[in-house]
Length: 284
Image (tube, rainbow, N blue to C red; front, side, top):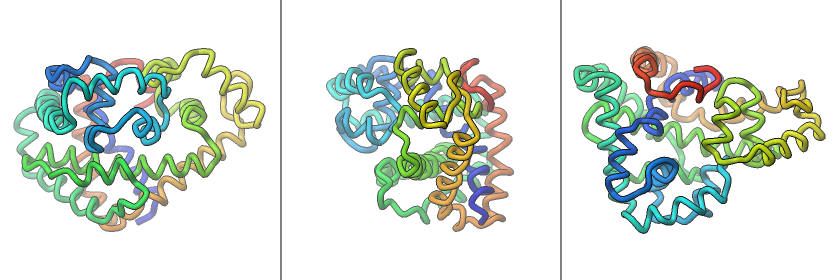
């Protein structure tokens, strides 16, 4: 399958995975375990598949977060509960969120089960070598309910792609913050205020990186991408698509098209029903 087309398909379905980071139901379930609400529930929910890892491993695998934030909020989460409990709580929260955003009938629809099986076929073609977040999640058991299996399958594909994206960014000579700044400058991800707030970078830290990247010819002094910066971002995305091609090759264009036919309307419905707060994304 054409890697660029596969990448576009993956990004179009990512909403159905990413909504779990914003769903109050997920935060409530993990918060009930004693984890502080907010960023701590995010780090715990996504890292739990790796076990009781420390801030260093999470900073490395999540890539774009301020290490000081991770060091501050993650250790107390593991003092309050266990990774196994968080994995279970995350699924309970996703279940409730999907039912609120999509409806009970959609969650049990035959086409959702079909989409889940397509993601299982795709995930089976993923090589875990060098993909720590994917590998950790792949060690978990697949949920049995169709909507949860779909979310889990898309989560595997998202983490597989994300691990490869980090490798592509590093190969391009970008640090985590530099990757975040340049991606935000494309206007297709987080807004700048949301990127700073959710990743815990100060205005001063952000401005320092903008100045450094401007000195390298990748940004203008006011933070816009130069031609060289836009080309570098395009190269990173192309490399990410190439590194993430294996599961989509396994599906082929017919399978990928069918997964998109089922998944895209669900993603639009979730967004329309308030899956994400206003002002977080520049474009969705």
